[in-house]
Image (cartoon, rainbow, N blue to C red; front, side, top):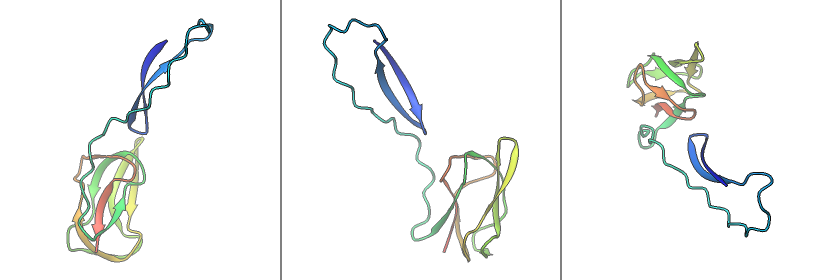
Amino acid sequence: MKNYTITVNGNAYDVTVEENGADSSAPAAAPAAPKAIPKAAPKAAAAGGAPINAPMNGTIVDVKVKVGDKVTNGTVVAVLEAMKMENDIVSDRDGTVASICVSKGDSVETGAAVVTLN
């Protein structure tokens, strides 16, 4: 048997793999429960704010708003670079920017809060 660590969606799992042709007369070991390795927590969203999240992994190349700005549905709040392409992150509602959760140059994961709106 061989032991491996496999990472799926940022969670690491320790697994044991039995090779084909192994002696089947040996007692089978109970499967090990996967144990997730915690990853760094994203910056927290402001209490009571509605977050606008990153649609994919990437790097923030520009933040287009500041705290207190009024935004409408479709307003570009930040620009994210992923796979050498720049993607606009847009507001999906009207509101006022309550907090900015990222800075230019930050790496973000899918679903990470970029800004929060009131």
